[in-house]
Image 1 (cartoon, rainbow, N blue to C red):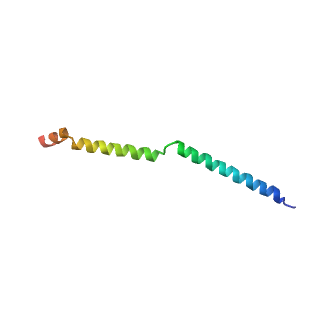
Image 2 (spheres, rainbow, N blue to C red; image 1 turned 90 degrees about the vertical axis):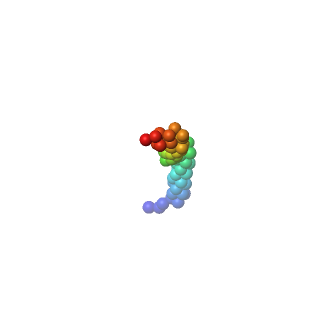
Length: 67
């Protein structure tokens, strides 16, 4: 059985084009939505800053010394 080199080349090019299109769509989808890790880090940092601000406030210092 003879293999048609042109047909094989065409099939390979089609598969490569499909893979390239899939990778492009995946990259666009990843850029469109923020990752959950970034949101978690931002929320954690905000809570830490809030905690530090509350710990440095004069109201919390007076309640600690009054105990």
